[in-house]
Length: 243
Ligand code: PEP
Image (cartoon, rainbow, N blue to C red; front, top):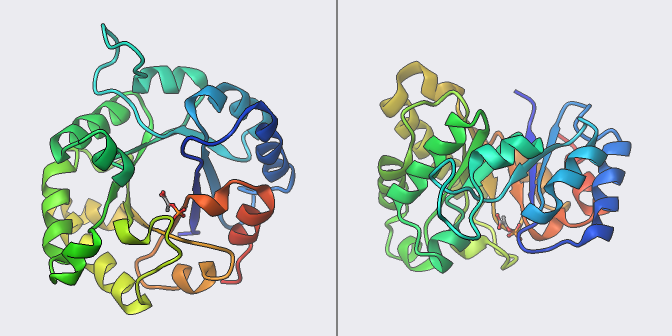
């Protein structure tokens, strides 16, 4: 399965930054062996879909659990799909931390994303303290048990150690392999053979300099990239990282 490279722009990007996505699309990103997906802020999704011209898949960074209703300021998965988005990220650690999202919330969002016809990138990962206490696998098991939707068909998991996000720190490659093997075992236990078909991404301080070694790790089906996804130059360097 060719690697999937996903950029998460978080709360970054104004109209002028659409040019970066146009540049990624023009460079043929997504047409080669590796697919490129970008989650810009909600305000840029419709314009991004136009300039991405099908070469780069555009997605949302979050969605509400309901399709519509009295939820001021919220965006539903159906609204994302209506704008031309093809995927949604749920359960990012910044939302678990800043918005107190629980595993149950994440599960409901993942279910809503699937119901709207979106592919769903569900994020899990341990904190620094949890890793220090030797609890990484237990945390991953517990997050998966609480947040996996019933249907695995449109599901992608992103393993993102919280302590690696935006810090410049990454786990050892052995630790990445171990976490991914553990996630795979959980997915197969939950979904049976379909669990082998769920792609698992690594995320946390991925850069052009470390992308190759991370993408070579067993069970790593791609990367979720924050800071290094904001410019075409940097993200294209990750998509072009030697296999
Ligand atoms: C992220 O927020 O999903 C992420 C991986 O960020 P960064 O690449 O900046 O660590």
